[in-house]
Image (cartoon, rainbow, N blue to C red; front, side):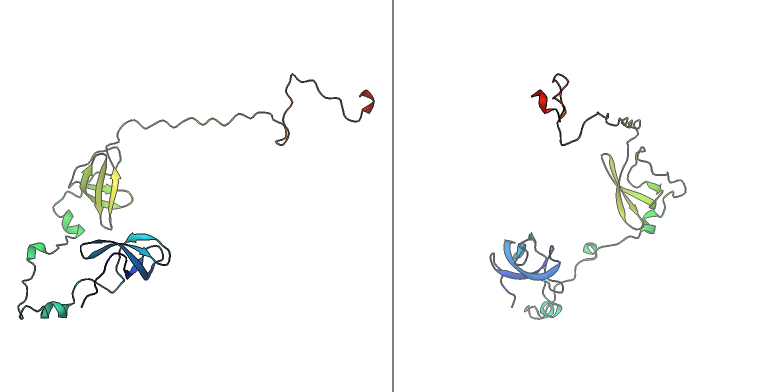
Length: 189
């Protein structure tokens, strides 16, 4: 039978700070699922991550025996399964030969193919204001676009002016003061 967890109880979880599976105190739950925990070793609070190799889903044997008289639940329909489309399939039918070279000054639209100097061929998947998500063969990057204004002038460099100062540990005498008597002349006193 599954263990019933409650706030304040303990559970083994993966600690994001310690990078180990350790004992944690349950801080918050959403329904029957643990949401937030505190590591008993480093006192770090974080979202609950189950220990590797454990799951809160029933095993295949428990699902098949299920206690429903041997009838199985219908499989998920084909529409609910994930369909993965390869990068090459996404580019099929697109005009790759005339793909413009990426520039932050240009503007782009969804489904447009671009050629990036570092990441190679890419497909614009989303446009958000002055940013675009571009899917490349290896990963998706968020880049800027539509910044075609004149390049901003660089600020002129002006080095600090050198002021003649004395030693740092002695204050400078002001010009209005009279100089003190030279040392080694005790007769003038």
